[in-house]
Amino acid sequence: MAIRTPRDPDEPARTEPAALTAHRGLATWGETLVPLGRFREAVAAAGQTLSPAARAAAAAEYLSTGEADDDSPVEGPYSRIVVCGGVYNNHLALARLLEEAAKRGAEAVYCLGDLGGFGPRPEKVRPLLDEGHVRILQGNYEESLAAGREDCNCGYTDPRDNHFAELSYRYTAERCSPEFRAWMGGLPRHRRVRVGERELLLVHGSPRRTNEFLWRSTSPVPFLEVLLAQSRCDGLLCTHTGLHWHRRLPSGRDVVNVGVIGRPANDGQPHVWYAEITDHGGELGVELRPLSYDHVSLAGEMRRERIPEEFVATILTGWWTTCLEILPARERAASRF
Amino acid sequence: METTTLPPLQQFAAGVPRVELAALDTLWFQVGGTLCNLACTHCFVSCSPTNHTHELMGLAQVERYLAEAVALGVREYYFTGGEPFLNLEMEAILAATLAVGPATVLTNGLLLDPARCRRLAALAASSEYSLDLRVSLDGYDARSNDPIRGEGTFERILGGIRNLVAAGLNPVITVTEVCREVGEDAGRERFFALLRSLGITRPRLKVLPLFRLGAEAERAGAYESWQRLREGDAPAGSWDHLQCSGCRMATDQGVWVCPILVNEPAARMGEALADTLGSFPLAHPACWTCHVYGVSCRT
Image 1 (cartoon, rainbow over the protein chains, first blue to last red):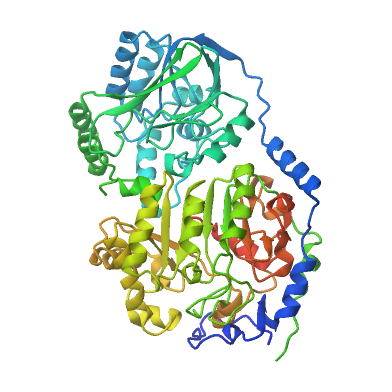
Image 2: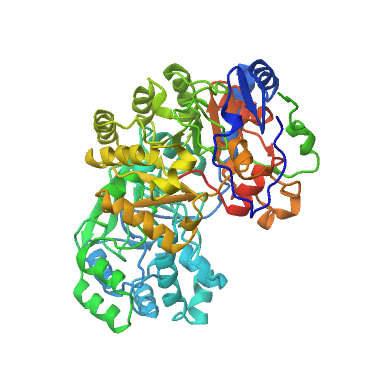
C-alpha cells in the first residue's frame, strides 16, 4: 500500500485510524507496510559497524575536532578578580559593583558582556566602564548592536520570550550611538586570565557559542569535562542565563556561571549577583556574592523612560516576569511565574 | 497488500547536501519502540499497539549507550516511542540517566497515574539535573483532540496532567499544528486557559509542525517531489541549525541520525554512537520540514 499522493490542502483530512497502524507481522518503512523481516534485513545492511579500535579512533577524533585553536594572550596573573555578567543598562548596580570591587581589593574587574537590556538609558554604563577600567567581552547584545541586527540573538525559541526580548533590544538599540556600537564591535569574544596557577577562559554563553545557555541543571559533568578539555582551560567563567552557579568537576576544573548584575536571580530577592575569583594557594577560590543596590531608584528611572511594567516588576520583586520559557524544568520550578 | 517501497535513501543522496555532526549534544532513545497504546492519525512514526517495527529498549541496552555518551560529553537525553511508559523499565532507565545528565520524556499522558507521578517527582528531586515531562495534546477539548488521538483520550490526558501537577511536576504540553489555531495567539491563549484550569500556574507549551510521514501522510497527504533540500538552501553554507547536527537517536536496532527518520532503514548510521559521528545526506523530504520550519524536537 503506497501512499504517495499529495492531497489537496482544501480537502478535509481523514479522521479514521490510518491503515499504516495495522501492523500485525508488518513494519512501517517510510510510507509503506513491509514484512517485518524485510525491514530488519534493510536495517542490518544500513550504516557502518566499526571495529573496537576504529571506534576508539573515531571517538578520539571527534573529541579533538572540538579543540579550540586559541593563541589569545593570557592576562594576569592575579590573586583576586571580580567578574560580572550582563549589565542590562543597570548603571546603579554597576556603580555599586565597582565600589565593592575596590573595597575588596580586586586587581581587575571583568564583565562578560550584554551591557544592554531592559534597564534605563544605555549610554550611562559607558563612563562607569571606562572609569572602572572594566575589561569587557562581547555578549550577544554587543554582537547584534555592532552588526546592526534587528534582534538580540539571545537564542530564545518561544514567542513569549521573543516578544519581551524584542522590546528590550529595541529600547537599547534606539539609544546607542553609532560610536558606542562601533566600540562594541571591537570587543573580544573571549579572554584568557590567569588567577594563581589556574588559567581561566572567560566567555559570554559558552566556548562554542555566544548565545548558548549553560544552566546548572542541564550542564552535566561529563559534558562540561569535554567542553573544558576542548577549550584547554582550568576553569570556565560564563553568564548569559542570568542565574549564577558553580560546579567543581572531578578533574578539579571549575565552571562558574557568574550570574548577572542587570536583574535579580528569579529568587524573590531584589539584589543581583557577581563572582569573586581568588587564588587560594594554588587552588581556585570561587565566591558567588549578592550585591544590593538602589533598585527602587532604578525602577523609578525605568518608569520615567516608559519601559514596560513587566521589567520594572522584576527589578522590584526579584521574580522574573519575562523570558521564562527558556528555563529548564528545575529552574522553572523555582520560579514564581 | 502492495509492498513496494520508496527508493532507498541513498538513491536520493547524489548531489544532495550533507550535514556534519557539529557536536553530539542530544541523545534520543526510542525507548518505547514503535509500540503505543494509541494510534494517532497524525503519528509520523505510525505507532500503534501492534507496531513492532522497533521494539522496547531494555535498561542494559540504554546503559551501554549512556556509557558511550558520557565519554563523548553528551549534554542531554530524550526518551520517546511509541509510549515510553509502556516500557516496564522506564523508571529505572530514568534513574540511570539522571545520574549522568538531564532527561526529558515525551509521553501521551495515559499511563501517568498518581503513584507513578509521585515516583517521577521523587526521581526529579533526587537528581541535580532536570527531569522534564512532555505530554502530547492535540486540542483544547474532546471535540478537537479525540478525532486525532482517539475517543476518550482528551479526558484521560488531562487526568495524567492533573496527576503530574498534584505531584509537583509542571509538564510541557506539546501541540502539533494539526490544531491549526495553535499557530495564532488566540489559539495559544485557549491552551493556556485550559492548563490554568488544571491548576497549572506556569503553563508551558511547545508547538510542533507535522511531518508528512507514516500515518500523517495518509491523513493529510505525503511530501511532494519538490520538497527536498539542495546545496544552496543552507544559510551561510552551514546546516548547523538542523537538529541532526547535534543529535543521534538510539533504538533497539542501532543508532539513527535523528528522531524523525526511524522508519527509514537508510537513516540508520551504525550500531554504536562512535559509528555515527560522521556526516549524513539531507536527502529525505522530512529534512526539508526541519529546515523550513526550523524544527527542533528538543524542548
